[in-house]
Amino acid sequence: MGRLYERDGKWWLDYVDATGKRVRKAGAKDKSVAQKMLSDAETAAEKVKAGVLHADPREARKPYLSHVSDYISDLRRRGRDGMYVYNVRKHLERAATEQRWANLTMCSQRSVSGYLRRLHDEGLSPKTVNAHRADLSAFFAWCVTQRVMEANPCELVPKSAVKGDKTRRALSVPEIKRLLGAAPEPRRTCYLFLVYTGLRRSEAAALTHGHLHLEVANAHVELPPSLTKSGRAEAVPLVPEVVAALQASRGERSDEDPVFDAIPLMEEFRADLKAAGIEEADGRGRKVVLHSLRHSLATMLVTSSVPMAVAQRIMRHRDIKLTAEVYADEALLPLSAAMSALPSLTRTA
Image 1 (spheres, rainbow, N blue to C red):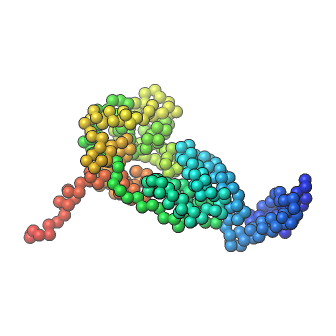
Image 2 (image 1 turned 90 degrees about the vertical axis):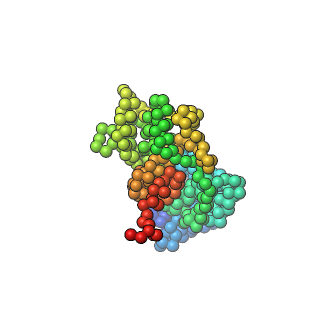
Image 3 (image 1 turned 45 degrees about the vertical axis):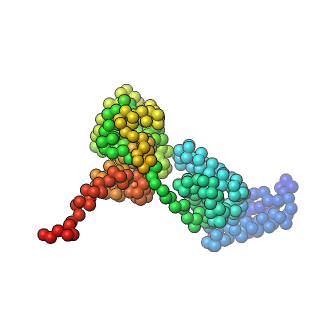
């Protein structure tokens, strides 16, 4: 049974919460108001213990931005990339500003849906709108696990349908060979590494020689959670060509030194494409960018008959559809050869 006690001209609450922890906190100057606060706190604790509620409703009434700050601190504790954390905070704060979310009780399915429609009406692409939804959903899911919110309002808000033509293309094997032949060192080694590992620009830029394991039976790159887009520790296998190139380029560098002094700028990449005789855009308007090397890896895996589940693991995609439908370039798949292997339905034996 909780109680009230007076101190410094204010009535304080003394009770046991749903976890069995004794809580002492300031209430109000008016005893009747403090008594109501105590009653609400004890009722909420009983409901949580009985399984009627999973979250303390008083927590949801605290300022929205205070929960955002706690979430951001937790992301940093988990080692998430600084730019990722910055973008998440920006998305969460923008939603609160535009929807006037003072606390979590105002974050309903309807308000989330309205916010995403507003982003769409402003001309943001479906992919960008989905990125905002993903950041909101991850935050609300965290709030649920912290027992400050009953349910994730994003769960019943569908993603935007991402349609339209691809804007990037993969390089074919002959084009990759020409690019490697035309690019000067150290850019050649960087391109070779990116096309065989599929690492993203930010991941490759953050690598040190300590992340490379070249002298073991199965040479690989070790990626800690702080470097990966997924926030999970991952390992990427290395082919002998890449191992040899990395060993030759290391010289006297220590484990703390970066693998690459710099990742090629787009201007440098364009110059190397031009030197290799590779058009920057194809007839469908799809462009070749540095990230195209990641598309090239996915396409080579598919055309080499690597099982799609294995290709997905190498690409480090959560969704196999991303590997098969987005990164594998259908224009480079051996579709004609596959059709010619089909049995004849008209010729007689």
